[in-house]
Image (cartoon, rainbow, N blue to C red; front, side, top):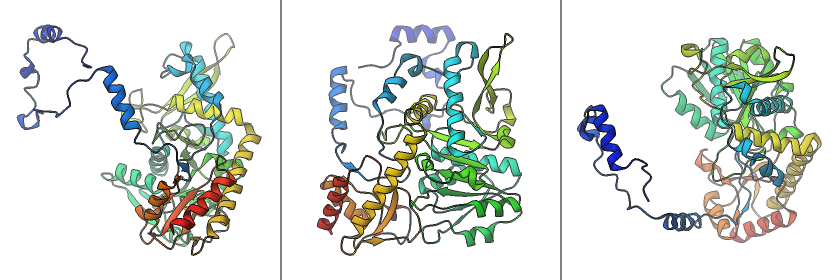
Length: 443
C-alpha cells in the first residue's frame, strides 16, 4: 500500500522541469549520509495494515484497574465532552489567523483562558501549550526574561519527568540550574532559602508535589519577592477544586498539565499545558493570547491580542519558538470544566481526596506496608514503603489486574521499595479493597 502520491511519470516530469536527475537532486548531501536501505517491510493492503495494527494494539493491557498517577490521571470523562468537541466546526478548526472567519474558535480560546484564570486565581492566561513539562520550561524561560537573571532553583519534589525535560531543553544554555533534595516529601525550604540570592530568577515548586504531598508556598513567595525573584508553581488542576490556589499563595507564574480536565490518558497524549501569570508579565508570556474587543460598529468580537512567536512581527525578539497551541485539547478542558461547574469540580476533588485517604488506610493495614512520608496533608496520591522491591511488586500486581502505581526508584535513589499510588473518583471501595488484598497476597 503505497503512500507516495506522485507516480514515477510525474516524478520524471518534475525533475525535468528543474533540470535535474534524482541523483542530482541529492548531490549536495555527502555520500556517507545517504541512506541506501530503509529496511522497511514490503507494502501491505489496507486490510492487512488494519489487522496488523489491531494485533499490535491487542498487546496493550487495557483492562487493568488503574492506580497510576505521577501527573496523568484516570478521571471520569462525561460522554457530552466528546459529543461536543467531535462536532466538525471544532474538530477541524485550525489557527485563527483571520478573526473575521474564526470567531467561534477565538471565543472558545478566550473562554478557556478565562477558565484557567479563575481556576488558578491569576490575571492572564495564554491559549495553551503542548503539555505540563513544556509549560514549566517556558515559565522558567519567562522568569529569566522578566528578571534578567540567570539562576533557577527547583526542588526535586517537582515531577521528575518535567525536570528531565527542563534539563534537556537547557543543556546547551548558560543557565545556572540548581536542584534541592526534598525534605521528607516536601519542598526543602531550608536548602531553597540558602541558595536564594540576588542572582536568582525564580524558585520552581509543585503543589500537590510528585509525592502527592500538599503544601502552602506563601512563605517562599514572600522570600523570593524580597530578593527580586519570582515563584513558579506547577499544579494539578483538579486539586484546585478544594486546595488553596497558586494565586492566593502569591505565585507569579502558574503552569500545569491539563490532561485531568477531560482528556483521556491515551498512552501518553495528546495532552495540554496551561500557563497563567500576572498582568504585568503578560508581554513576556509565550504563545498567543486571545482578547475580547469591539469592531467599528460596536459589536463584540474576539481577536489574537498578543502573539509572541518568531513567525510574526516579533522575529528575533520573540519570547519563544512555541509555534502552536493545543486548541482542541484546550476546548476539551473548557467543555469538561463547564459541564462539571464550580460545585462539580469541588465534588470531584473531594471524592479523590476522600478515596485516597481510605486507600491509604487499607493499604497500610497490610503487614509491613507503611507510609513513606509523614506530610500533614496529601491530595489523591501518596507513597507507600513496601517490604519488597516496588517495581517487582507492581509487576506481580499487573498479573492480578492492577496498574498498582509508579515505582519511584526510576527517578529517586534510595526508594527501591517506594510505590506512588493515585486514586481518582473512578476507583470504588471494592476496587481499593481488592488492591489491598492483592498486595497482601503478592507480599
